[in-house]
Length: 343
Image (cartoon, rainbow, N blue to C red; front, side, top):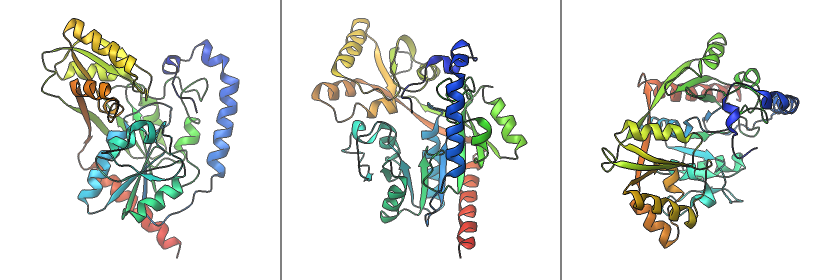
Protein backbone atom coordinates (compact mmCIF):
# COMPACT_ATOMS: atom_id res chain seq x y z
CA UNK A 1 0.00 0.00 0.00
CA UNK A 2 1.30 3.44 -0.84
CA UNK A 3 2.09 5.69 2.10
CA UNK A 4 1.19 9.04 0.55
CA UNK A 5 -1.58 9.95 -1.87
CA UNK A 6 -0.31 11.97 -4.88
CA UNK A 7 -2.24 15.21 -5.40
CA UNK A 8 -3.37 14.18 -8.90
CA UNK A 9 -5.46 11.40 -7.38
CA UNK A 10 -7.87 14.05 -6.08
CA UNK A 11 -8.21 15.86 -9.40
CA UNK A 12 -10.19 14.86 -12.52
CA UNK A 13 -8.44 11.96 -14.26
CA UNK A 14 -5.62 13.28 -16.45
CA UNK A 15 -2.75 11.80 -18.48
CA UNK A 16 -1.11 10.42 -15.34
CA UNK A 17 -4.17 8.40 -14.35
CA UNK A 18 -4.58 7.24 -17.95
CA UNK A 19 -0.91 6.24 -18.23
CA UNK A 20 -1.27 4.15 -15.08
CA UNK A 21 -4.62 2.69 -16.09
CA UNK A 22 -3.21 -0.76 -17.07
CA UNK A 23 -1.60 -1.06 -13.64
CA UNK A 24 -4.78 0.16 -11.96
CA UNK A 25 -6.73 -2.50 -13.83
CA UNK A 26 -4.42 -5.23 -12.58
CA UNK A 27 -4.58 -3.87 -9.04
CA UNK A 28 -8.38 -3.78 -9.23
CA UNK A 29 -8.52 -7.38 -10.44
CA UNK A 30 -6.33 -8.54 -7.55
CA UNK A 31 -8.42 -6.54 -5.06
CA UNK A 32 -11.64 -8.02 -6.50
CA UNK A 33 -10.29 -11.54 -6.17
CA UNK A 34 -9.23 -10.88 -2.62
CA UNK A 35 -12.71 -9.63 -1.71
CA UNK A 36 -14.43 -12.54 -3.42
CA UNK A 37 -12.25 -15.29 -1.95
CA UNK A 38 -11.83 -13.87 1.56
CA UNK A 39 -12.52 -16.37 4.32
CA UNK A 40 -13.35 -14.06 7.19
CA UNK A 41 -13.31 -15.72 10.58
CA UNK A 42 -16.39 -15.18 12.72
CA UNK A 43 -15.67 -14.21 16.30
CA UNK A 44 -18.13 -14.36 19.15
CA UNK A 45 -18.56 -10.60 19.39
CA UNK A 46 -20.42 -8.06 17.25
CA UNK A 47 -18.07 -6.30 14.81
CA UNK A 48 -18.74 -2.83 13.40
CA UNK A 49 -16.25 -1.67 10.76
CA UNK A 50 -15.71 2.04 10.14
CA UNK A 51 -13.95 1.98 6.79
CA UNK A 52 -13.44 3.90 3.59
CA UNK A 53 -13.10 3.25 -0.11
CA UNK A 54 -9.85 5.09 -0.68
CA UNK A 55 -6.35 5.64 0.58
CA UNK A 56 -6.14 8.74 2.74
CA UNK A 57 -8.21 10.26 5.50
CA UNK A 58 -11.98 10.56 5.37
CA UNK A 59 -12.75 11.50 8.97
CA UNK A 60 -13.05 7.93 10.25
CA UNK A 61 -11.41 8.49 13.63
CA UNK A 62 -13.92 10.99 15.11
CA UNK A 63 -16.72 8.83 13.67
CA UNK A 64 -15.34 5.73 15.40
CA UNK A 65 -15.04 7.65 18.68
CA UNK A 66 -18.63 8.91 18.42
CA UNK A 67 -19.88 5.37 17.82
CA UNK A 68 -17.91 4.08 20.80
CA UNK A 69 -19.52 6.72 23.00
CA UNK A 70 -22.95 5.63 21.81
CA UNK A 71 -22.13 1.96 22.42
CA UNK A 72 -21.06 2.85 25.95
CA UNK A 73 -24.28 4.80 26.49
CA UNK A 74 -26.20 1.68 25.39
CA UNK A 75 -24.44 -0.40 28.05
CA UNK A 76 -21.71 -2.04 25.97
CA UNK A 77 -17.98 -2.05 26.59
CA UNK A 78 -16.56 -1.38 23.14
CA UNK A 79 -12.98 -1.88 22.07
CA UNK A 80 -11.19 -0.63 18.98
CA UNK A 81 -9.34 -2.92 16.62
CA UNK A 82 -6.61 -1.10 14.68
CA UNK A 83 -3.68 -1.99 12.51
CA UNK A 84 -1.86 1.10 13.75
CA UNK A 85 -0.52 3.07 10.79
CA UNK A 86 3.26 3.19 10.89
CA UNK A 87 3.48 1.28 14.16
CA UNK A 88 6.41 -1.03 14.82
CA UNK A 89 4.73 -3.64 17.04
CA UNK A 90 4.94 -7.29 16.05
CA UNK A 91 2.53 -8.70 18.68
CA UNK A 92 -1.01 -7.70 19.65
CA UNK A 93 -0.87 -4.83 22.13
CA UNK A 94 -3.38 -2.87 24.19
CA UNK A 95 -2.53 0.81 23.80
CA UNK A 96 -1.50 2.76 26.89
CA UNK A 97 -2.26 6.36 26.00
CA UNK A 98 -0.22 7.61 28.94
CA UNK A 99 3.02 5.91 27.94
CA UNK A 100 2.95 4.55 24.37
CA UNK A 101 4.34 6.70 21.56
CA UNK A 102 2.89 7.12 18.09
CA UNK A 103 5.99 5.73 16.40
CA UNK A 104 5.29 2.37 18.06
CA UNK A 105 1.49 2.12 18.02
CA UNK A 106 0.37 4.74 15.45
CA UNK A 107 -1.24 8.13 15.99
CA UNK A 108 -4.91 7.22 15.50
CA UNK A 109 -4.82 4.41 18.11
CA UNK A 110 -3.57 6.93 20.67
CA UNK A 111 -6.58 9.15 19.97
CA UNK A 112 -8.96 6.19 20.11
CA UNK A 113 -7.47 4.98 23.39
CA UNK A 114 -8.79 8.08 25.13
CA UNK A 115 -12.29 6.66 24.66
CA UNK A 116 -11.98 2.87 24.88
CA UNK A 117 -9.41 0.03 24.85
CA UNK A 118 -7.48 -0.29 21.59
CA UNK A 119 -5.78 -3.44 20.31
CA UNK A 120 -3.08 -2.70 17.75
CA UNK A 121 -1.89 -5.53 15.52
CA UNK A 122 -1.71 -6.56 11.86
CA UNK A 123 -3.37 -9.82 12.98
CA UNK A 124 -6.94 -8.65 13.46
CA UNK A 125 -8.15 -12.03 14.73
CA UNK A 126 -5.55 -12.01 17.50
CA UNK A 127 -6.44 -8.42 18.28
CA UNK A 128 -10.14 -9.25 18.55
CA UNK A 129 -9.43 -12.07 20.98
CA UNK A 130 -7.20 -9.77 23.02
CA UNK A 131 -10.03 -7.24 23.31
CA UNK A 132 -12.38 -9.99 24.43
CA UNK A 133 -9.93 -10.95 27.17
CA UNK A 134 -9.88 -7.28 28.20
CA UNK A 135 -13.63 -7.51 28.80
CA UNK A 136 -14.85 -5.82 25.62
CA UNK A 137 -18.18 -7.02 24.24
CA UNK A 138 -18.42 -4.89 21.10
CA UNK A 139 -15.67 -4.38 18.53
CA UNK A 140 -15.20 -1.32 16.35
CA UNK A 141 -12.70 -1.83 13.55
CA UNK A 142 -10.95 1.38 12.65
CA UNK A 143 -10.45 0.77 8.93
CA UNK A 144 -10.05 -2.83 7.78
CA UNK A 145 -13.05 -2.85 5.44
CA UNK A 146 -10.91 -4.61 2.85
CA UNK A 147 -9.47 -7.02 5.43
CA UNK A 148 -9.78 -10.70 4.56
CA UNK A 149 -9.50 -11.90 8.18
CA UNK A 150 -12.44 -10.82 10.36
CA UNK A 151 -16.14 -11.28 9.62
CA UNK A 152 -17.82 -7.87 9.70
CA UNK A 153 -21.38 -7.66 10.99
CA UNK A 154 -21.90 -4.09 9.80
CA UNK A 155 -19.66 -2.13 7.43
CA UNK A 156 -20.12 1.64 7.61
CA UNK A 157 -18.26 3.38 4.78
CA UNK A 158 -17.19 6.97 5.44
CA UNK A 159 -16.87 9.27 2.42
CA UNK A 160 -15.42 12.77 2.66
CA UNK A 161 -17.89 15.16 1.06
CA UNK A 162 -15.06 17.46 -0.07
CA UNK A 163 -12.87 14.86 -1.78
CA UNK A 164 -15.17 11.93 -2.47
CA UNK A 165 -13.32 9.16 -4.28
CA UNK A 166 -10.99 11.49 -6.18
CA UNK A 167 -10.54 10.57 -9.83
CA UNK A 168 -12.23 7.20 -9.23
CA UNK A 169 -9.26 5.11 -10.40
CA UNK A 170 -7.76 2.32 -8.36
CA UNK A 171 -4.18 2.36 -7.10
CA UNK A 172 -1.69 3.40 -8.52
CA UNK A 173 -3.62 5.69 -10.88
CA UNK A 174 -6.03 6.86 -8.19
CA UNK A 175 -6.94 6.49 -4.52
CA UNK A 176 -9.46 3.63 -4.77
CA UNK A 177 -8.55 0.42 -2.92
CA UNK A 178 -10.79 -1.51 -5.31
CA UNK A 179 -13.45 -0.47 -7.82
CA UNK A 180 -16.55 1.25 -6.48
CA UNK A 181 -18.79 -1.60 -7.63
CA UNK A 182 -16.65 -4.26 -5.98
CA UNK A 183 -16.37 -2.43 -2.66
CA UNK A 184 -19.97 -1.28 -2.32
CA UNK A 185 -21.14 -4.86 -2.72
CA UNK A 186 -19.84 -5.49 0.82
CA UNK A 187 -20.95 -2.20 2.41
CA UNK A 188 -23.97 -2.05 4.71
CA UNK A 189 -24.31 1.73 4.88
CA UNK A 190 -22.69 4.97 3.77
CA UNK A 191 -21.78 7.98 5.91
CA UNK A 192 -21.31 11.32 4.16
CA UNK A 193 -18.82 13.27 6.26
CA UNK A 194 -18.82 17.06 6.02
CA UNK A 195 -20.11 19.55 3.48
CA UNK A 196 -19.67 19.38 -0.28
CA UNK A 197 -20.85 17.49 -3.34
CA UNK A 198 -17.81 15.30 -4.10
CA UNK A 199 -19.50 12.29 -2.50
CA UNK A 200 -22.64 12.57 -4.66
CA UNK A 201 -21.60 9.81 -7.08
CA UNK A 202 -21.11 7.33 -4.24
CA UNK A 203 -24.35 8.46 -2.58
CA UNK A 204 -26.31 7.86 -5.79
CA UNK A 205 -24.77 4.43 -6.18
CA UNK A 206 -25.51 3.52 -2.54
CA UNK A 207 -29.09 4.74 -2.88
CA UNK A 208 -29.66 2.63 -6.00
CA UNK A 209 -28.24 -0.36 -4.12
CA UNK A 210 -30.65 0.22 -1.25
CA UNK A 211 -27.95 1.09 1.29
CA UNK A 212 -28.84 3.45 4.17
CA UNK A 213 -27.16 6.84 3.93
CA UNK A 214 -26.17 8.73 7.07
CA UNK A 215 -24.70 12.20 7.44
CA UNK A 216 -22.29 13.75 9.91
CA UNK A 217 -20.15 16.85 10.20
CA UNK A 218 -16.97 17.77 12.03
CA UNK A 219 -17.44 20.05 15.03
CA UNK A 220 -14.19 21.68 16.21
CA UNK A 221 -13.52 22.62 19.81
CA UNK A 222 -11.91 26.03 19.77
CA UNK A 223 -9.03 26.49 22.25
CA UNK A 224 -9.14 29.80 24.08
CA UNK A 225 -5.79 30.89 22.69
CA UNK A 226 -6.76 30.95 19.01
CA UNK A 227 -9.62 33.37 18.46
CA UNK A 228 -8.34 36.70 17.16
CA UNK A 229 -4.70 35.54 17.06
CA UNK A 230 -2.33 35.43 14.11
CA UNK A 231 -1.51 31.74 13.77
CA UNK A 232 1.05 29.39 12.31
CA UNK A 233 -1.06 26.33 11.54
CA UNK A 234 0.69 23.08 10.68
CA UNK A 235 -0.62 19.60 9.95
CA UNK A 236 0.53 16.22 8.72
CA UNK A 237 -2.82 14.69 7.79
CA UNK A 238 -4.53 13.48 4.63
CA UNK A 239 -5.97 16.90 3.78
CA UNK A 240 -4.18 19.73 5.61
CA UNK A 241 -6.28 22.37 3.83
CA UNK A 242 -9.35 21.14 5.69
CA UNK A 243 -7.59 21.81 9.00
CA UNK A 244 -6.49 25.26 7.88
CA UNK A 245 -10.12 26.07 7.08
CA UNK A 246 -11.03 24.88 10.57
CA UNK A 247 -8.53 27.26 12.16
CA UNK A 248 -10.20 30.14 10.32
CA UNK A 249 -13.66 28.85 11.29
CA UNK A 250 -12.82 29.01 15.02
CA UNK A 251 -11.52 32.57 14.75
CA UNK A 252 -7.80 32.16 14.12
CA UNK A 253 -6.09 34.34 11.54
CA UNK A 254 -3.93 32.25 9.21
CA UNK A 255 -0.59 34.01 8.87
CA UNK A 256 1.50 30.95 7.92
CA UNK A 257 0.52 27.38 7.04
CA UNK A 258 2.83 24.36 6.89
CA UNK A 259 1.81 21.01 5.39
CA UNK A 260 3.55 17.72 6.07
CA UNK A 261 2.97 14.20 4.81
CA UNK A 262 0.15 12.22 6.41
CA UNK A 263 1.31 10.56 9.66
CA UNK A 264 4.54 12.61 9.60
CA UNK A 265 6.81 12.10 12.61
CA UNK A 266 8.32 15.42 13.60
CA UNK A 267 12.07 15.74 14.04
CA UNK A 268 13.82 18.31 16.19
CA UNK A 269 14.77 20.07 12.95
CA UNK A 270 11.08 20.33 12.06
CA UNK A 271 10.12 21.88 15.37
CA UNK A 272 13.13 24.22 15.30
CA UNK A 273 11.91 25.53 11.94
CA UNK A 274 8.29 25.87 13.13
CA UNK A 275 9.29 27.54 16.39
CA UNK A 276 11.67 29.96 14.68
CA UNK A 277 9.01 31.03 12.18
CA UNK A 278 6.43 31.50 14.92
CA UNK A 279 8.84 33.48 17.11
CA UNK A 280 9.96 35.74 14.26
CA UNK A 281 6.40 36.79 13.52
CA UNK A 282 4.86 36.44 17.02
CA UNK A 283 2.48 33.73 15.85
CA UNK A 284 0.45 31.24 17.87
CA UNK A 285 1.29 27.65 16.93
CA UNK A 286 -1.77 25.50 16.29
CA UNK A 287 -2.17 21.93 15.06
CA UNK A 288 -4.48 18.91 14.99
CA UNK A 289 -5.03 16.37 17.77
CA UNK A 290 -3.56 13.72 15.49
CA UNK A 291 -0.36 15.72 15.02
CA UNK A 292 -0.17 16.54 18.71
CA UNK A 293 -0.10 12.89 19.81
CA UNK A 294 2.89 12.34 17.51
CA UNK A 295 4.72 14.93 19.61
CA UNK A 296 3.82 13.39 22.98
CA UNK A 297 6.51 11.67 25.05
CA UNK A 298 9.33 13.03 22.90
CA UNK A 299 12.71 14.54 23.72
CA UNK A 300 12.89 17.44 26.21
CA UNK A 301 13.02 19.87 23.28
CA UNK A 302 9.94 18.32 21.63
CA UNK A 303 8.10 18.25 24.96
CA UNK A 304 8.78 21.98 25.43
CA UNK A 305 7.52 22.66 21.90
CA UNK A 306 4.42 20.54 22.54
CA UNK A 307 3.49 22.73 25.52
CA UNK A 308 3.42 25.79 23.27
CA UNK A 309 0.78 24.38 20.96
CA UNK A 310 -2.92 25.03 20.80
CA UNK A 311 -4.67 21.87 19.62
CA UNK A 312 -8.04 21.76 17.87
CA UNK A 313 -10.03 18.67 18.82
CA UNK A 314 -12.76 17.44 16.45
CA UNK A 315 -16.04 15.67 17.23
CA UNK A 316 -18.25 13.94 14.66
CA UNK A 317 -21.81 15.22 14.95
CA UNK A 318 -24.51 13.07 13.33
CA UNK A 319 -27.70 14.37 11.75
CA UNK A 320 -30.06 13.20 13.05
CA UNK A 321 -28.41 12.63 16.42
CA UNK A 322 -30.09 9.22 16.71
CA UNK A 323 -27.99 7.82 13.84
CA UNK A 324 -25.24 6.29 16.03
CA UNK A 325 -27.89 4.44 18.05
CA UNK A 326 -29.33 3.08 14.80
CA UNK A 327 -25.92 1.95 13.54
CA UNK A 328 -25.03 0.21 16.82
CA UNK A 329 -28.46 -1.41 16.92
CA UNK A 330 -28.20 -2.74 13.37
CA UNK A 331 -24.76 -4.16 14.15
CA UNK A 332 -26.14 -6.01 17.19
CA UNK A 333 -29.06 -7.33 15.15
CA UNK A 334 -26.74 -8.65 12.44
CA UNK A 335 -24.59 -10.33 15.10
CA UNK A 336 -27.64 -11.96 16.66
CA UNK A 337 -28.79 -13.26 13.29
CA UNK A 338 -25.49 -14.93 12.56
CA UNK A 339 -25.35 -16.34 16.10
CA UNK A 340 -28.74 -17.98 15.57
CA UNK A 341 -27.69 -19.31 12.16
CA UNK A 342 -24.57 -20.85 13.67
CA UNK A 343 -26.54 -22.98 16.13
